Structures are given as C-alpha cells and as structure tokens.
Image (cartoon, rainbow, N blue to C red; front, side, top):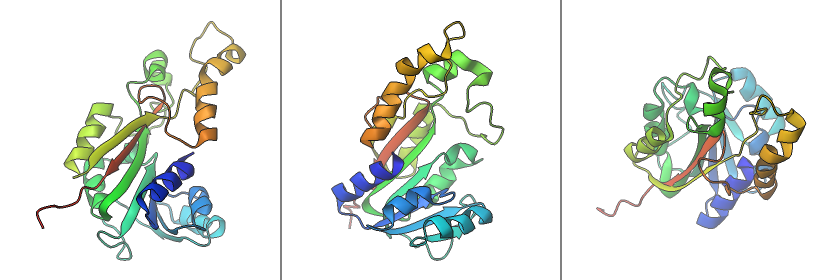
Length: 218
C-alpha cells in the first residue's frame, strides 16, 4: 500500500527521485526502483545489506537521522520522502523531520505514518494496544502534535488518512472470527486499492501527506 501511494503521488507531481527513511529490507523500494531513482536510509547496517539484495537498483545507506544525514543526500534533491513506522522511534522526531524536509524540492511530497493515539484500538486496548507494547516507541504523540510538527518543519498539510483497524481482537467477549469482517475488511480494501482512502481517525496508524511550499520570496 505504501509503495502504491508513493507511486501515485510521484506520478501526480511528475517526480523522479524518492527517499525512503527506515527502508528496512527494501521491500517497498523494490516495487519502485524500476520507475524512479530510489534511495533508502536505515539505522541498521544489517537491514541495509539486506536491502542491497531485495532492492539492488536502489542506493541504500546506514544513518542515524537524529544525528546527521549521509553526504550523498543533498538538500532540495528529492521529489518524495517516505517514512513509515519511523518517527515514533525517535527521541527528537521534530528535529529529524526538519532535517529531512530540507531534502525536498519545492512542491516535493513528505509521506509518513505514525501510531494513531486517538484510534479506537488505542482506547479499547489500553496498555495492550500494539504501539504501547513496543518499548522502542518513545514518541507516541497525539495526531494534533504530529500535524503541528508538519507545520514547524516548513511543510503544508495536504491530507490525513489511516490504514484501518487490524490489531484485533478489540472486543473481548466477541470471538475473533466474528470481528474479522468488521475490522479487517476496510483495511484490506485500502491495501488492495493502494490508496489513502480511510478517514484519519479510522485506523491504528495516522498517514500524513504534506508538501514543501514554493518560496515565493525569491
């Protein structure tokens, strides 16, 4: 789904260069590298080595985006930056977002996802919610805070969406098999469509699409 969304926005804006932050093993990049010039960064050197196998046409680098970015990634050089399941792991997500935003060309797209602390799942499951069970999630922030960060990073919000409810069971007294069609169907449809079609509050993760504005002072 994330690769499809990135592809659609690159087509819409006519972009050619993409950077995935937290690229992991490069599975998303492997779906995009035939059409675009693709780059990836990940904190894990092992993940970067695996990305070289699964996405051999992409340039993947090991880097801690909270500290500094590799010299190969230059300012105003990317048409789209994608960061799925990244910022919740950072102690200073705003600083990282600002650093990454500098890499975007004017009208470039910034596409990221973070756990949605306002989701139904977060309220129903409490400490058992998927995002709260991961001790590496050090920045579980409210959606309004993430949107404030978008503005503070010099970006303009274009769209909010979600990935649906998939952290079931949600209702303790109802058998899981009965909850599947109720909760998983919208998520499955969104994945199959490859689009950000679900409302922002209708899912476990908040999907944010923003753009870098043109500097009209020049």
